[in-house]
Length: 134
Image 1 (cartoon, rainbow, N blue to C red):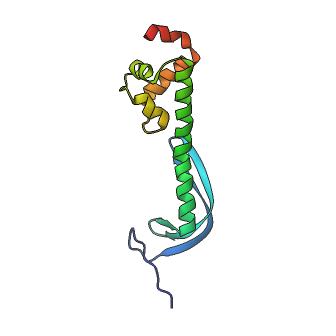
Image 2 (image 1 turned 30 degrees about the horizontal axis):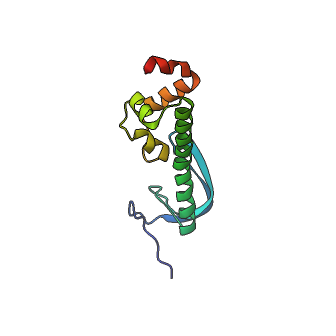
Image 3 (image 1 turned 180 degrees about the vertical axis):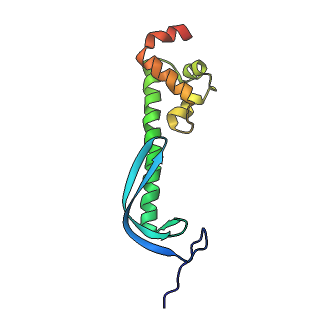
C-alpha cells in the first residue's frame, strides 16, 4: 500500500509526480532551459522537488548560467587592461579599487561594480581617453 505524500512547503496532500518536463532558469538577463526533468510537484502551492538525477542536472545548469558569464567577464577585464598597457595596480588606482582589486577581478574572486566595467568598456572603444584620466 503506497502512502500519500504531503507537501513539505504547505502541507497539502496533493503532491503529484511529473516526468520529462522542461524548466527555464534565469540570472541577470541570461536564461537557459533544462529539458527532461522529473520529480514531484504540489498541486496547491507549486513547490517542486526534483529526483536526484534531475536535481543534479538542474544545479549544474544553474552553475553554468552564473559561472560562464563570470568567466567571460574575467577574460574581458584582463584583455582590456592589457590593451591599455596598465598593470593591475594602475588599473585599480584608475577605477578606485584597492591595490588587489584587479587581481581578484581577473581570478573571478570578486565582481567589479558596473561602473568599473562601463569605464573599461568605454576605454576599450576609445583608448585615447585614458590620457584624460591619468
